[in-house]
Amino acid sequence: MNRFKYLLVAILTLLTLYLSLSGTRRRSDSVLRTAYWPTEGQCVDAQGAGADYAVHMTGDLEGCHYTFIETYICSQGGGYNEKGHEVFCRFA
Image (cartoon, rainbow, N blue to C red; front, side, top):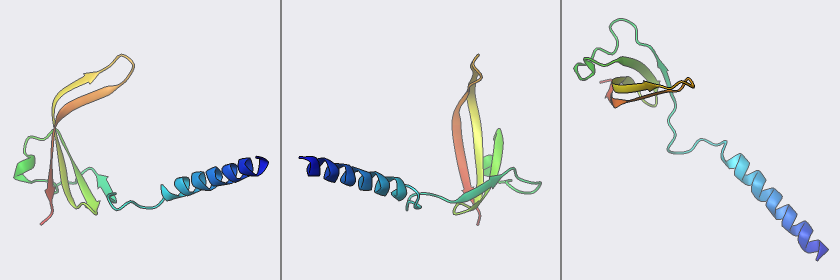
């Protein structure tokens, strides 16, 4: 019975180690990108006209990400929530 406990602890330890290390690898559905506020002349696509703000993106996703805010709420606790839609225009 004592051997069974040691074996169970060893298996659980190895399983925990494996699961914690497997999360550090890049998943195939992850996206590497860098986003920054556009400079003049960037993010001037017609689809983004009237956007509340735009973000210029490089990396796996290259283009401009436009956000159109329709409603927003600021809570007393300091939380901020906005609803709307987004448009992404890929560089040609």
